[in-house]
Image (cartoon, rainbow, N blue to C red; front, side, top):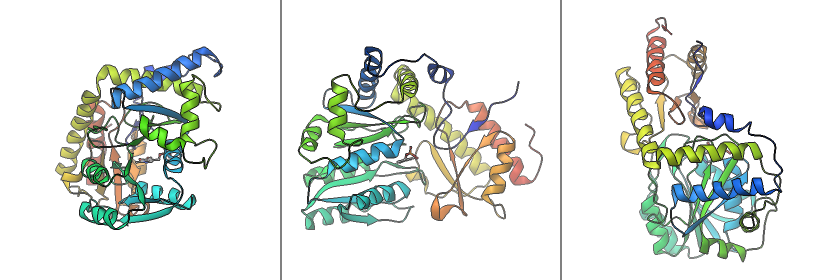
Length: 366
Ligand SMILES: Cc1ncc(COP(=O)(O)O)c(C=O)c1O
């Protein structure tokens, strides 16, 4: 039997047959009760998985992760207020970019991609800039695999009475995250990373009171206005045409996540990254980040001496493994290996064997 292609990129990930097969469940009208039921169930499962209780509510968008990012950012800031964006990677940079497109007053604290934000500097900024209303942070910087200090950022945001907005698109389901315990007011997620759904849906988990505050802000977008989307979804409806089959797949993925258990899912990813990293060390690879900053699902490695990313990528792809390039400034230096998705440990071992053979210049036995 031909081996399947193993995706070691950070989304879209390999999904189970159950999730993939859900796509073919049949055509329904999104204005009918059948869709309304699925949407309600998906929204409920999101809260159950990531913020159990009644403090948080959810809202789902047809669109990739950036759609939910744009919805959150464009809806969160009151007129004349300022957003503080913490930028230590591509996705922090993207939040700052969205804030610029909306012509928000913005303060950006930029750090090296290997470095955690300086909480004392954040505090000093909040102290000296009372006009800041929102603090925006990326939980897991997918560009490098770095985990940011969510708890500390939440604490300082709360101390100064700020709204804390967290992009956990590649964190939810892969990393421990206590939204209430970390004072997160709005959390951004997407279907096709650690939740193991298919691409095309993203969502927000947000405090009910945050939604009430957002309702007072004049809309800046039709499609991405969070309160209008939420109100429509609460009524069992949807303002625009949703991606119905992707909802089917998302429903199946969330059922699977709840059956596996979020902590067990995280533990599975932890085991997978441990297996990979042990192999990388044995093969002599150099890690881009210090170990204490590493997430459970992405490892950034320096390219082997004398080998370009393209060569490494193509040789691995010939054998059925898809790795991922370093982003922007890292693209000639670093490559990334993600272990999100439905990947068996044996497939990771095969990948390590193949990688070792390529680096040693010998024949890969697969
Ligand atoms: C942390 C983070 N934020 C935002 C995005 C953007 O998501 P998308 O590419 O689905 O629009 C990604 C995608 O990888 C991400 O990892």
